[in-house]
Length: 142
Length: 142
DNA sequence: GCTTGACTTCGAGTGCGCTCGAAGCGGTAC
DNA sequence: GTACCGCTTCGAGCGCACTCGAAGTCAAGC
Image (tube, rainbow over the protein chains, first blue to last red):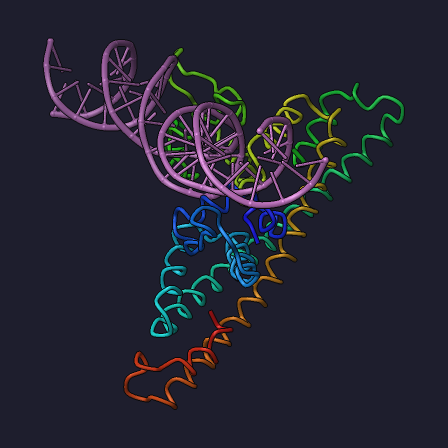
């Protein structure tokens, strides 16, 4: 397939695919009749994997390391596995950190809920005219 | 406290703190004797919250929206809560997506483990000289 | 009174990951 | 045979979030 169809299929622009080839993330594609890139469907598997690495926060320079190892054959299997294990650990850590943040957000949101309930019981029709004391009491939610 | 100490306490550089004030993420700080910024420890709570938003992937333009609402008092409580709830949903979705990726990574890593075991049983002392057939069999792990 | 060091403003520079436009070529449809 | 569309290369530009350097001010310690 041509670059345009590949772009449609993998959800990138042709520009981005050429950029990836240029920097070495994608192998140099065979040119049909000497000009246009011709792709085999198998490239999609690799692109999806790259996308997985990208969306899990791996910077391009690390993807490049992996891509280069991949290009050199089975002798680098072990090194590639280690690279992935390192990344796996980073992703796991990120998940943990995000879960902590989720709890913190929940607490904050709950604080707002309480503040709103207090405001509506003290001044049901016009909460914007609440004075100093109430303001001080809701300060934690800010 | 002065900007240097605040920087030390919150783990940012003074440059970044000034930048945040410039764009409106931090309130304009009171200048002692007309020149140097003087901070109250309470600013740390706000900075930590900003950091939480940042590390969970909120772009600065959204933090700015929140910061501006915060500056206008209790009338915007509801809007701020909605903003946080939206962000909470985004963080939860991100966690889900990362967990999927974690499984995918585990599968891939397991594939490498298998490939290495096969390689070492076929050619225990020099795995780099394995030939074509073995290579085809390990292709999935690439 | 002079050194030191932390502060001030302003604007330019950096690294990342694309994103786009210009200028030109080539194959297919009518 | 020509209009059109998608492809080619190359290099510049962009949005984000800082990051840094220059040039100058100011207060405290010796």
